[in-house]
Each structure stands twice: as structure tokens, then as C-alpha cells.
Length: 392
Figure 1 (cartoon, rainbow, N blue to C red):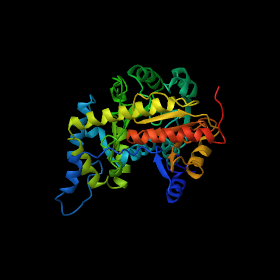
Figure 2 (cartoon, rainbow, N blue to C red):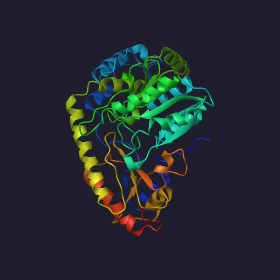
Figure 3 (cartoon, rainbow, N blue to C red):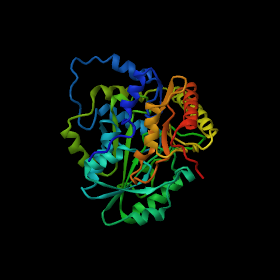
Figure 4 (tube, one colour):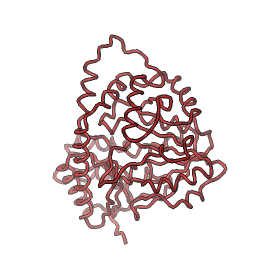
């Protein structure tokens, strides 16, 4: 059965709160409020075509050539035969699971993980074998021997998200090289979701799994323009692999669904020309938002908020009995000065149902003044929440 989205399942309660006149601070979803680059907006406004035709199933060739140049600029050496333009990063994940794995095969993923991996695995008939990462070390990569304990004859792949959604953790080059050893040993695929590549902080740099030596045929990279250029709605992603069998198999799916959105590809292609100053301003803004949130949350008794190295999410531990109940209570029963907060219960980011019940994922995609107001709401909510527990 397809699981519900922990990010969106509380929407009816949020809508009801708004109808009651309550302002809801949306910390539940990674929808940036950063403007889409002007070059992308202008490209869509200035389309001269009289017919919006089907594009090539692999994506508009000129766009793929621009992607090659973009990847070269971030030290990833690929060509247009190594990639397919997809309907968002979501389709790239589905393609990877469907092409590289058979129903009943197993994939190891550190948890908590992006909740929709569950849905794509269900669609593909793939079985997720979660491996626990803990907030006690800010969700660092689990020990490699723990990965090995999870490997069975049915194991076909390991998947990571780097920088991570929902934790904000950035796996280092050293951690990825440790992971590559076990991928080589068992000849597994390594799926690497790298859609938050541009969002790395405090001098830390992203290292792509495509640059791991000796894994040329093992790595399948998932990418998307949604967060990089703040245009989630264009639904354009990329599947990238030097394994020709993966690309050929994915092409069969691509041909069956005909093509990725034409207008989205126009916007995405133009966005590659976004000036460097745009990213400098965005990076500075997200750093400030992160610091505002982390400092504010950690000043509240009973809360532990790690300092994320990347993306614009963080998974936070709260002194609560049940995150699903708490998130719904915030929307149904609580308000402070006419305001409340919408968070994503972390239970939905774990495959192990016993985990994450005192954690929530927060997306710091709001302006700092709104983040401060949201933090104040949470502080006041925890004073009166009937399910508050003390964490020892």
C-alpha cells in the first residue's frame, strides 16, 4: 500500500486552521520563498514557439549539452549519453529503482530518509532495509560494518541523500569513500540523491558519488532543478549514470511516458545561466536562516537541534510523546497570538516504525522574522502541550 506523505498529510488541518483565522507558519515543506532566477522567468515569457511539441524522451538536446557544462563546473565529468531529463527528481528515483532492481530486491538506506523513497520503493516492488542513523551524532553515516550486517543475497543497492533531506547532514568525502568499499565488495549500485548540492555551509564542500574511483558502473545520481533554482513546480530532474545499461533501461520508461515538460525544460535550460551573485545571496540567506533557527530552538528547554551542514532542513528532537499527535495538535488546538506552526512528523521519515516519534523535520525556508515567530510559537506550545515528556 502506498504510504501517506508525512509532509502533506496534515494539509487539511492546516487549511482548517487558516479558515479559523489562525496564521500558520509552514515549516513542513521544502518550498523556498527565494525568487526563481530572472533568466528562467524571462525564457518562459519569451517563448516564440507556436506549438509546444513533444521533446526528445531523453530531454531537449541543447539542454542536455548545457547540463554537461553545468556538471563540469561542479567537477563532474559526464556527457549527454550519461543522462536523461526526468519529470522531477522523483521520476529519476523511480527509474533508478525500477531499472536497476527487480521486485523483491532490497535496498539499504540510512534512516531517517526522504519519505517519498518509501512510495517509490512500493511502486517498484523494492524492499527498503533501513539502517539507523542517530541524532546523537547529528545523523552521521552509520558504521560500515552496520551496512554489511544488512546485506543479503537480495541486496542490490545502497541509497544516500547528500546533503541530506530530512537531517541536513552532509556526508564527507571520507565517509563516501568508506561506503564505496562495501559497494565494490558486493558489487552493488549506489544511488546518490544530490539535489541539494549547492546548499553546503561553514566551508564544507559537496563531493559527488560520481567521483568515487572504481564505481564508474555502480553509481546512479539523482538530480533536480527544483531547489537549486527555487522552481519546484517546473518538475524537471535528471538521472545520471555512466552505466549504459541503466540509461538504456531508463530510456524505455522515458519513451513510455513520452517526454519531460517542455516549458519546464525551457526554464531549466535558461536557469543554468543564472549569475553567480544569485547563489551567493541565496547561500548567505540560508546560512542566516539556519543560524536563527538553530540558536532559537536550542534556547528552548528540552529541544535539541543539530547544526545542519547542508540542504535547508533539520531533524529536531522535542520533549513530546508522539510527533504525529503533536503536529496535529498544533494545527487543531493550539495558537499563540493567533499563530501556530506546521511541522513534518519525523516518524514518516523512518521505515522502522518505533523510531522518530519525538522528532520533527523543519524546513527553514521562511524569512528570519517568520522563523523567530515560529520558534516562539513552538516554545509556547511546549509549555501547554498535554503530551510533553522530559527527555533524560
